[in-house]
Image 1: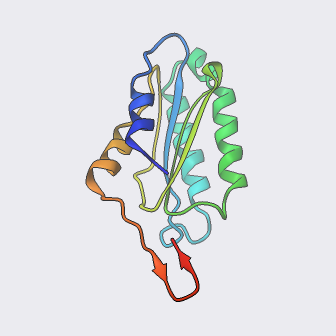
Image 2 (image 1 turned 90 degrees about the vertical axis):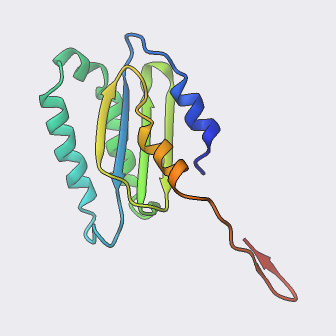
Length: 139
């Protein structure tokens, strides 16, 4: 579950020579009935790497491969949106499955790109449904 404390922790990380890969991907089955989001990811990846310094591209290659494997391996586990923030040299991997579609974005920078996560937290209230009968209760 996405929390302010997790986003605050990520946003507090200062930049150095190690880069972060921040991915936001719309995996909504209504708009991606055939799993088209993998194609969208690969297109974003190609476009981002084409516009990026080759040295930086090599430094995040491990992160990009891990993210691609994560997307391929978790097709049935996604909700409507997924976010991944990764930096292999720092040992950071955060993935968030959200119940709302997100705008497709891939950002490679010296700090994590958390603006879409903050927007989700600010614009949508969290809620819970509790089902109760005489014998059981479910959240």
